[in-house]
Length: 203
Image 1 (cartoon, helix red, strand yellow):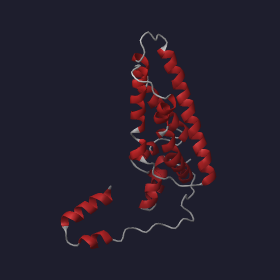
Image 2 (cartoon, helix red, strand yellow):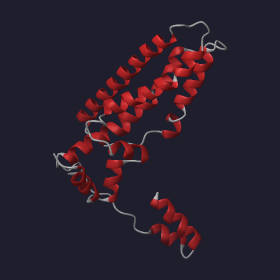
Image 3 (cartoon, one colour):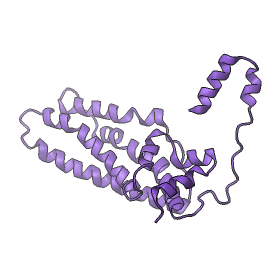
Image 4 (tube, one colour):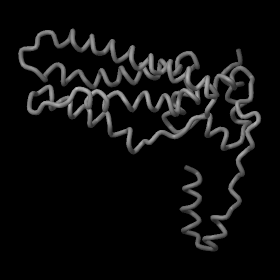
């Protein structure tokens, strides 16, 4: 099996666009640093389920007065969350293995606030102030993680496995053209605008 150094050296030899496809943004780059057996899509899905379960500790512990079995309920729901998110990770990997599609950027502006909204609604529901539909609450809590795994991480993990096995995941795909400096031509000698363009391209 290739070492991490060999694997990273192979990635560094690829074009910039191909490296971005393999490594993604900051979150995916953190996952990509882990061994492939550890950052399996099922494990990443289960990790998201664990984060949701940890966020539910306070609503479960202090939401209902006289609830002496809240810890048992929390452990039960935690196990369900881990199993459900891990299963969805396996399903995403199976679908990606069949479709062979490359990763796409998930709708971050839509997905990122959803767990916080769901947690807020669950807190309101557990305190008894206003009853909230359980389906809405759990959908808001659970949807972002599996959607990210399905759209972004599962396809990326498949490509990383191909790189580690010595295969070219971009074989037969025409390379994208590199920027031709059109932005510099448009702004002319405006140095401030050029600095903004350079900063944008570096991100």
